[in-house]
Length: 97
Image 1 (cartoon, helix red, strand yellow):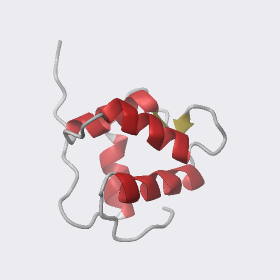
Image 2 (cartoon, rainbow, N blue to C red):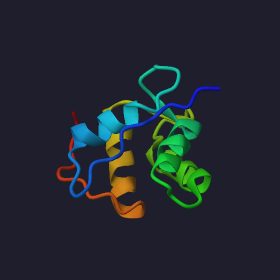
Image 3 (spheres, rainbow, N blue to C red):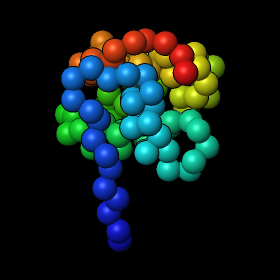
């Protein structure tokens, strides 16, 4: 079994583009959407405690259409807001890409 090495989230304030680029590393099925499991892997790479729980809450907070994944401008914006508020990620600008 091969282990993937992920690029870490930049320190300090993170731009939307940096956050999105970092998060895209965990899109295992390359569909442009982040599932709960993929978000859990992203959080685990940051050594976030209770990553399964926080991933569940993050997807719930961001998933406006309730399809089980985060995708599209509105949902990604919601995930950024969740990360800033609950995961203590400093985002330089909240906006859409």
